[in-house]
Image 1 (cartoon, rainbow, N blue to C red):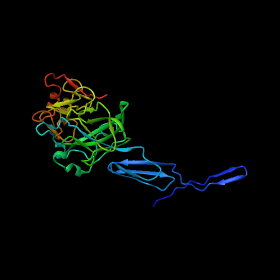
Image 2 (tube, helix red, strand yellow):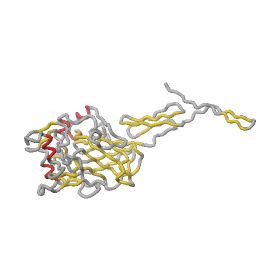
Image 3 (cartoon, one colour):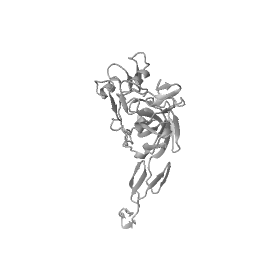
Image 4 (cartoon, rainbow, N blue to C red):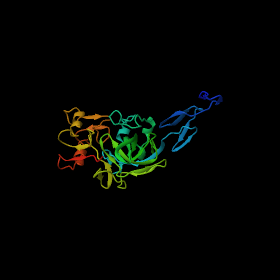
Length: 314
């Protein structure tokens, strides 16, 4: 049932003359709420009204209007850990093994969300195979056009086998509830080095395409991604999530793999969704075929074990 909120009548008295004002309906305050399913606007002082959204379109009735609009981004990026150079796609072992969590993992890992966080998916999203198969969750940031260290909004989203980063329905462009403006865009993953656009991009309701895989999108820093025979992919092997891929020495990324499997028998394995699973096949493995230690050594050059790869972020 709709309710009408009415402010009390105001009596103004001037000398011997008086004027009585009739009750007026005034939209004095209200609010706005949005999630992946839609948005709702409401006001106090008038009949309750709603804002309906469908895709990038909005229909709003009433005085109170949301400050933010829906902007959409089509991002493409590869994770080098599961990347298969033979198919030019990423393997979806985490999905096929049933290990991908239905709720984003980044909040629990200590990532700082701004506006986002807690995104979840239906189990049916993980039934798609082929190019659209979900590989894992990723963490996205929009940063201030005037200060590339200032994070204005975040979202957890999904990356598919073909590199497309999509919203929680597994197919749509990723939506952010922010004003249309220019932003730096970063892509992060729990055991890969983060990347960010070198320049800002103008975001609005029409999806903007950003491809990190073919060299068409300049990235911040130098050598921000691995070159896999002409295809760019995010550096894998940051098991400790400290922004450095390191094979030996203090705080290296190799030792945690051995610890995860028990620390005694190097041929043991661990099944599940772990930071130490560099290849992202659902099997944490220290030695043998498709182990998680070798990609780290390969990424640092494969010759000098004390070399490192550092994340290129401001």
